[in-house]
Image (cartoon, rainbow, N blue to C red):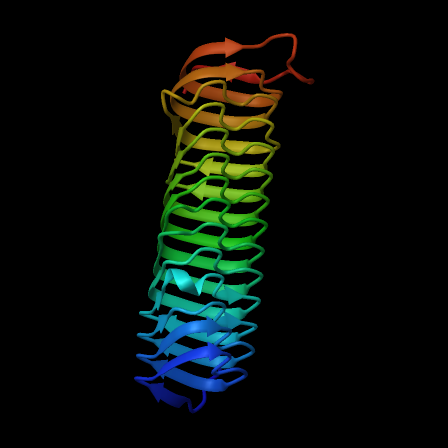
Length: 286
């Protein structure tokens, strides 16, 4: 955000259509945006502190804005689209379909309890101490993502994402990381069936994996010192995998190539359907 004198708007209420349209260098304190649309559309260099947003689409086409200790109610759905340069801290976002087609956004200590269809087509994203729930289809088609100390419940997350790094996360998601490219996850718990299918260069370091049929149809899959739960069966089908697993694996099915080292493997299934080169080296020596 630009450094310059800001016009202060304090203890005010606005509603209706575009009440602050195309304003710039504006600081809002304890302001309420009631029902209406596009309150701060096409704005530049905006600060909002201790504000409540109830109307639809308040921040569209905004260039450079800071949101601190604010509340977006369910009525403020689709509040932040087509914008860039967002810093959001200590804020609750109750509305779905947030953060679309955005660049350079940072969320710190943000809670999104209804995160459906959120963070689509965004790039250069930083999350710290963020919690999301009901987060179906989170992060669809997004890139350059940096996440740490993160909690998520919601399915089909991170599909078609690229260049992602995640640390210290708990992710409960069916069909997470499908069709991703260049994703690395450190020291995290990943729970949910069909993890990482059709991914390219997915790397898991010191992670715990739960859920049936994980990590199938992968290209360049790497697992370093991970563990796998008792429901993580039929793993690695048709995958190119290099894995060190410091636990039992319930079952491994038809890995295509690479190597798998595990503490133990309950069942290894190599049948007529294994894909060439069909040369995966599977051992139980750590």
